[in-house]
Length: 327
Image (cartoon, rainbow, N blue to C red; front, side, top):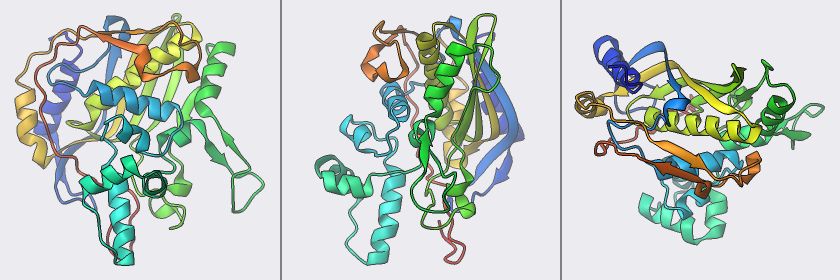
């Protein structure tokens, strides 16, 4: 029971036992949730890529690169056959086309159009103010009321440079939560139509090792959290490498952590499984700076998980139009 993956399995059990039944605005399924939990992984013992079900490693790699390179269009992901972000742009596309009373493409047609039609992709594949833009191009409007930002801030690069110059700094935070663009705090023309869930992380040095703590305000523990654990643990490895330190801990702190009712059967199956050894990774020696990183620079070794357990994504959260009473 000392395998670190039991922290995740115990979190599932905690929610099954103690979870409060909730109905998210705009959702068509209920969830069961608890508030304020934390798990942590010693990265010297391997990459916490969960083994009680297969985690989509290719998706982890390409999504993290998408974030780290500051991209906002899903075309990169679609071109690499990674479809974890298809639902939100398709949801936005449908809402716009409905207003125009035009023929609506089904999801498969929409994704094929993103892949083959650059003009269509530029128009309908964008997710502005997604994590990558906030990490690498945070808009700063100092001195302006409206219009284009006076400048952009590269938070991720600043953090890396700060660690190099002042390893024991306490201010090395990357934030994705900008209220100017979120929920009913935003003007309709500025809003993000999707939720920012893993909204802030901090780097900290202790005993010569680089640690990363993520705060995730809202967590789909069955579908999303295994992915988030792997992604931010990998980010910890990458930042440690380019700053010249050994990775220490990845600490995952949660706000609302929940299981959707249409995942309960899958969760009960997963908690019966016994964890296996975590895999390890190698990062190519050519990665010396944050912008050197590419998905092909990471080699995953000795990953031997149980079979995958599938579940349907609940596309919830984001902008809410009060007057129309819809998402």
